Image (tube, rainbow, N blue to C red; front, side, top):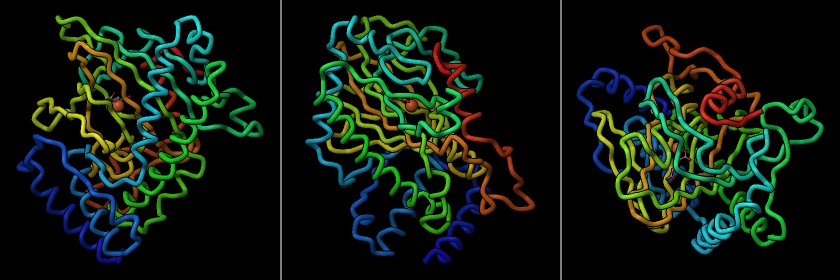
Length: 345
Ligand SMILES: O=C(O)CCC(=O)C(=O)O
Ligand SMILES: [Fe+2]
C-alpha cells in the first residue's frame, strides 16, 4: 500500500512542479470526511491520505467532518471559554500569562510582525487563555526554565472548567496524533514514519476571545493579523460568528465560514519545512466585523522541542535540493514567539 502511494506521490510531485505556474488557486475551503480513518481499512486510509495530499499542497485549509469528537464536548468547551472570559479582569489577571506562555493573555500584548506577510502595526484585538503541554520536572528544560517548560495556570475555584478543558485537550491530542499518521501517508511514507517527531509534542490550546470591534475598523486593525501557524498542524473550532479568512495564491482573502460540527485543519510551517515547500502553510487572519463577541478554540500540535527538523529525503533529489537547513524545533518556535509577543521565556 505504502509503495503504491510513494509511486503516486512522486508522479504527482513531478507533475505539480512542471505545472506550478498554471495550478488553479482556490476560492472555497474543501471538506475531508474522516470516517474512513476510523474503520482501519487500508483503502479508507489511503483515500483520506490522497485528499490530504491534494488539499495541503494547494489550499492548506480544510473542514474535517466525521472526526469522532463529540459535539457536546465541543459545546461544553465553548461554554467554558465564555465563562473564563466573562470573569472580572482582576481574577483573570491573577493568572496573567507567565514566562512559560501559559495563562491569560490580555488584549494588546500580541502582534504579528512577519517580514513575508503584511505588516501589523496595531496589536491584535483579541484575548486568550492558553495552556500548553505538561513538562516533566526532571527535564533539563524545566530545571533551566527554558523553552516554555513550566506550569500551566488555572483560574481559582473553577474545577469544572479545568476538567472540561483537560478532557477536550486529551481528545484533540488523540485526533492530532492520528492526523500526523495520515499526513505521513500523504507524504508517501508509512503511517508511523513521523511519530518520532512527536514523542513529547509541543501543544498549545488557546481559548480565543475577539471582542466586538467598532463599525469602522482601520485597515491594519485585526482580531489576529495575517500569519502562518508555527507548528505542524492546527485543529480549530470556531463559533457561529465568522471572521476567519485565508489567503489564496492570487492574494485574495477567502472566507472560512463556520460549519457547525466540523473542525478546521490547517497545516503549519513545519509541514512546509519538512516537505521542502511541496506542502504549504497558508496565511490567515481574523477580522470580527459582526458587532458580536467571537470565540474560537485553536489546538496547535507541534513537534517535540528538541526534534530536529529538516526537509525529508522523499522531497529532495538532485534537481530539488533542500530549501531549508536542519533546525531544532525549539529554536524556530522561540524565535517566532519572541518577535510576536510581549512575553516568552
Ligand atoms: O480565531 C481563529 O479563527 C483563528 C485563530 C488563529 O489563527 C490562531 O490562533 O493562530
Ligand atoms: Fe493561526
